[in-house]
Image (cartoon, rainbow, N blue to C red; front, top):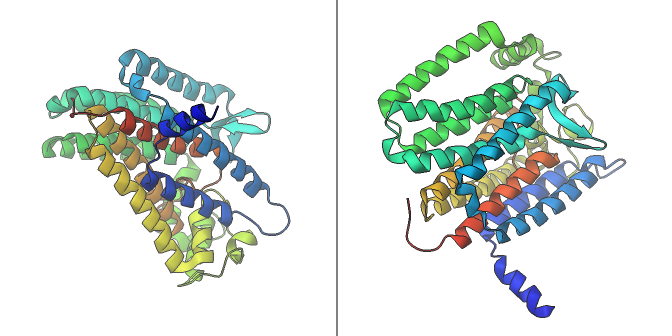
Length: 369
């Protein structure tokens, strides 16, 4: 029994530069959503999700994930993700006008979180085999087709923020794969045309209102601009040292809506101030730097692209979430990695780190294409 336990410990080789920042971010979110009085609903449930996520991370570090390189595995997984997103449009639970969840009693599952990780795997497979020919525009368009399927299904929920993240993942991975400047200009032009078409023919009124409230936030502080306005107040009121743990008036008195999810960065900034926020973003930089460093040292192109894809995913969520909390970007409902309340995104984020830790351990030897 003791020998088996030692063998198990030897198989779990943690990358502490990934594990510690992610754990501290999770704990920072947990402390921020704790009311320290009365009902601690979010705190208790998130504590369970963090524990489950860390267990999944540890298990994932043991599993040999090299089978994910096989097309015969990835394609069915991709099709399952597409089927789940399509099923949401028929049987999904609608919350705040967005049909993004499957409800199973007290539990809710958001397939778009898993879909983001799956599209990273698909693009990693595609670019790892065709990175030498990436300057051929055909490969850019074909890779974009995979992302477009996920993008459209998420956008139709309608989850504008999630769709933007999927587009950002595809664009970021195309850029690191070696796209030419000419083709980059074509992509930018295509993006401008798509954006104009979306504004004219696709965006529903509340999505337009969010963008307009970003341009003129003070013109409708009691309506579309209310969340952004309260968020900037929370961030600014933290000043240098913050109001103290559990003393955030904007969040704890519920002036700031959704402080445990969409605006947890603002709630944290109010209580911890500029100094605490700097440390928080420093942890994010350590995590991102480690992801990129490991990706550069990976032994196969697939692992390199997957590591960079996960880094892009986290960077997008961090940048967009912090930007919208500080009034620099439109409010899109993007979670902050490891901090925001919710099980779906937390499980996906810790699973991604577990897969990366595993591939780093199982892939030894000279670099392969």
